[in-house]
Length: 321
Image 1: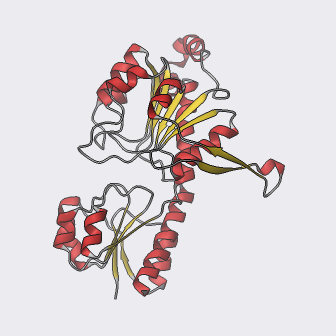
Image 2: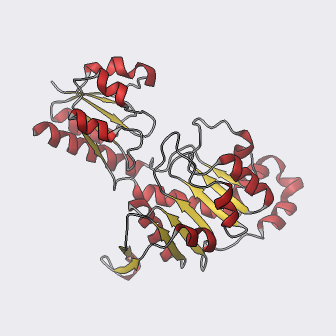
Image 3: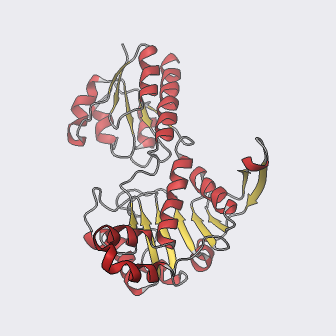
């Protein structure tokens, strides 16, 4: 019987499909330092972003046939080494794109309208601070007419662009692997199947940094890499730019981001991911111009359901081969 460890969990519908196919599915979390021992009892492992499947684990588990990643990125898996070992790596690149893109705009709206400040202060100090908060929050800005920079223009970046265009924003995209992207913007108010086709041609990284009112990041990042955004990059941005990172912790240097927030070079930041998780840099966590979420970009009910089903279907197909 095929045994599967869903170490970062799996939606009930996905688990049901696997069990109906005759697989045994365990979803009790195994600590990273014990994984190499426990995983010897399984044929496949399913992970999200929390669990890392590196060379040492693959070497310790010759029984491992498939690694499944729920979501887009594969930076927590040594994919090339898995290929060398004959281990199949699968993921679900389309299942969580909409969820991540929508969270980007949750952070953008929070920062643009000071919601991260008012939500912190009003519960305890509404009476004495109400007028001051009202005055400060009245300096909020609209997204319509502004320029959205999208760093990394894969599936998630393109979903962000669709929403941005629908809001009346101009989109600048950077991606060294894409010459152009044809995206279809769905407008249900005009009919069930009405879509506007729009072509976006990526520009240089420098153009995005210089000309964007807001920048969102959807790029890979591995532990030990140099931050994509450091002091030099922050200095070239428009003064008062808003930044959102729902990709990987470490893409933005948190200490340099703090300096830019304090100086006003960056007006606000929305962070779903952090250099260390759980996050430890309290100055960032407590900054009044930072909107926070606990690494939940792709974790809506709808996305979890789609991810579970897609992983199950791909696993079943692999083992049938």
